[in-house]
Length: 154
Image (cartoon, rainbow, N blue to C red):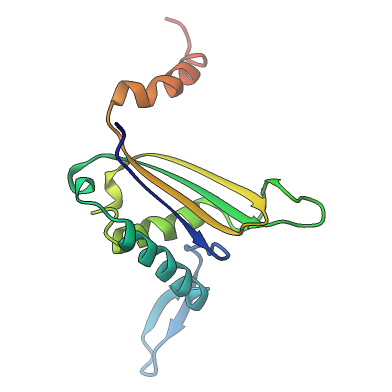
């Protein structure tokens, strides 16, 4: 039996990663997220749903995290891939930090496999599925088959 946590966060996914340089009143420089107010609201929503869904077995486990970001549908594309801004890695970074704050992860270093998709649809938000990475060979079988096709023969 696979142990897992899953939930949906409603709302426009916000990326983390672009920084803006600022200065304090006394002239000291600092860096902050360029979209700090929107990111704070998004991460709070993810963190709260993570807290509601946390379980004790996660504490010691290597984990697989699957994220599906659903961006608003457009006239040109009602559903399908969303090869547009925001970048998928910046979306993921904010969510992993929020999952850690929400205690679904002890540390994002626990994540040993990550599957992320960015699509268009009417139900805007993010699906999150975190599960126990129970068998190394099972998890990597498909990846190994694909990668080994490209390896030079000896």
